[in-house]
Image (cartoon, rainbow, N blue to C red):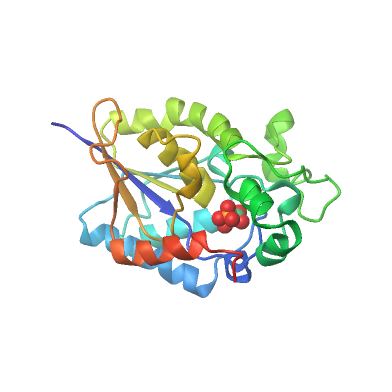
Amino acid sequence: MTSHKLILLRHGQSEWNEKNLFTGWVDVALTEKGRQEAIRGGDLLVEAGLLPDIVYTSRQKRAIITANLALEAADRTWIDVKRNWRLNERHYGALQGKDKAQTLAEFGEEQFMLWRRSYDTPPPPLEDSSEYSQSNDPRYADLGEDLPRTECLKDVLDRFLPYWESDISKDLLAGKTVLVAAHGNSLRALVKHLDGISDKDIAALNIPTGIPLVYELDENLTPIKAGGTYLDAEAAAASIQAVANQGKH
Ligand SMILES: O=C(O)[C@@H](CO)OP(=O)(O)O
């Protein structure tokens, strides 16, 4: 059976992951730890003999630099690149720039988890006048009415799926090994779609930073093994737990 190979890579630790702040569309840099995670991600690809033919990224530098570092480690910096805002992190609305622990303390666990992990409840929208708004960012000037001011996971799926259909799935079906370097919540949207996870169950799924998650897909682009395979399962399990507990310390 021919299988199609899709590698998902969440960016390495960012400066705001380290500070425990809601990030969304704010374009923060990687920490040194994050850069090392990205390089290790590339090393893991080489060890597994998985060499991408094309890389997709968001328009955010934490994903772009992660892809660059991983591909440099794998000596694949020459492959074709496609960047699209549809792979951006979920827009976190008025929570962008807020401390996760303080938000949890202020609003309580139920509201905090509703905003953070429910499928269809977005946080309040972010004002265009906020220092954390992207409304005047030239990189999104082409979006017009599509520029989000807040998003829930459903909104992310709605803007991601057309791009999956028009580009990513076509490259997979053409036989390319595809690397998607993106974000916690845009990758949760992709995994929800691939594995057919319910709106309720997706709340419990978290994606670790910097560890490649490999899916082998059949001719219908259905995963041969549900959930795919993390190239470092032990590190992934520890990191997933840390993401799940964010705010609760
Ligand atoms: O702040 C964010 O943009 C995301 C990813 O770091 O956070 P969370 O895991 O809380 O959705």
